[in-house]
Length: 278
Image (tube, rainbow, N blue to C red; front, side, top):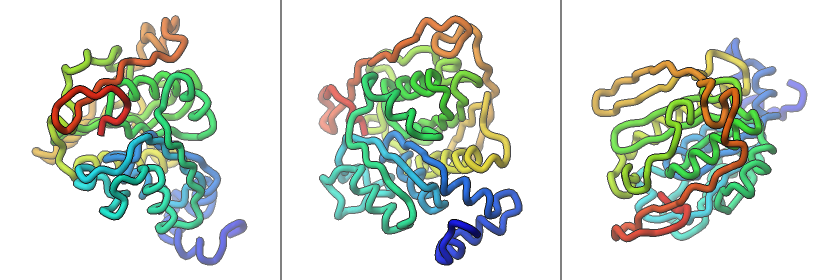
C-alpha cells in the first residue's frame, strides 16, 4: 500500500481486510481531519477510537483541567493527569496509542469569535461538549460552514445521537429550536451519569465519523438515536429539516453566531460562570 509503512499496514490490518474499507478507505482515514469539541466523557472514546482507526489529524478543544470526578467516565485521562490540561492529557494518550496521528491541541473556550475559523480547518466536527451554549454554538457554526457534524448528549442513564450535514439535513435546532432556560436542565455534576453511558454514545459517534470519512453505510442523517441504558434499548426518531428553522431554514434569522450565557454549578452547588461544565 503506497504511502503506508509496514508497521501501519500491520496496525490497520483488520480495517484493510474489510471489503467496504480496504486500502482505499484506510487512505481516506489517514488523509482526514476531525475536530473534537470537548475531551470529557463523550470526547474520550471518540478520541481514542479515531486515533486507533488511523485518522490522520485530530483536533481537540477543551479549556478545562482533569479533575478527580472526571475519571469515573473520561477514559482518555488517568490519575497521573490530575490538574493537567485535558488537551495535553488527551494528546499524550493518543500519542501512546498511535504515533502516526497528528494532534492539534486547542486549549481554549470555544466562542462566537473563534468557532467559525476553528471548524473551517477540519473535515468533520464532533460535539462532545456538556453544556447547551456550546452545543448550539457548534451546531450553528457547522450549518453556516456547511460542515459534517456528529452531535450527541447524555445524562444519567440516557444518551442521544444525530449526524448533521450542515445546511442539507436536519440540524439540532430543527429538533430543539432554542436552548432551555438556565437551571431547568441539570448538568451531569448535578444529576449524575452512569460511567459507561458516554462510552456507548461516544463509541457510536466515532463509528459515525469513520463511516462519513470512508463513505460506507448510512449516516444518521434526519434521524435521532436514543439510548436507554436501564432498558438496554435503542429508539430511533425520524426528524426533518425545517423550512422555518432559525439557522438552516429557507430564510434563516440567525446569520451570526450567538454567545449564550454559560452558567454551571460548582461541585459544592454554587453558581459558576464560564465554560467548564464537566
